[in-house]
Image (tube, helix red, strand yellow):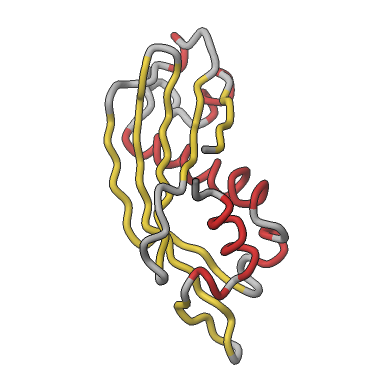
Amino acid sequence: MIQYQISPGEIKTFASPFQPFLTFNEFVNIVQWYRDSSFAPDNVPGFEKDVGQAYNVWTRRAVSTYHRHIFPDELSEDVTIAFEIPHLERNASFPIRVTIFDTLGVYFEHEQEVVVERLVDGRFLLTGWRKVPQVAKFLLSQQG
């Protein structure tokens, strides 16, 4: 499991003005931002250079579970966002499980089915995650 701390001030940057709590889509925006700006670049060598050039990674399906609101003005401590690869049972896709929580419990859970496309003859085509070595190496490293 890979975790990042999000300060109350940073949580506020995802919130709509004049709304006292994060809305439905703002939780997903946090997940997307941290997946694409921290989780993937921090763990998949060359991600920032290669994505969109040699391969693409995108969310095919997502399921979200909301447990409680985040009221940014009431936060007194950092919130944690945790990423986990729960299994690698499929070759064509892989899951990412994301949890947002603090010391009082879970706010939000999100599971994505992620697919990979490789650039082949000038076109991006769906491919198995094992065919992109740097993605495969990272995913396999996350299995216990």
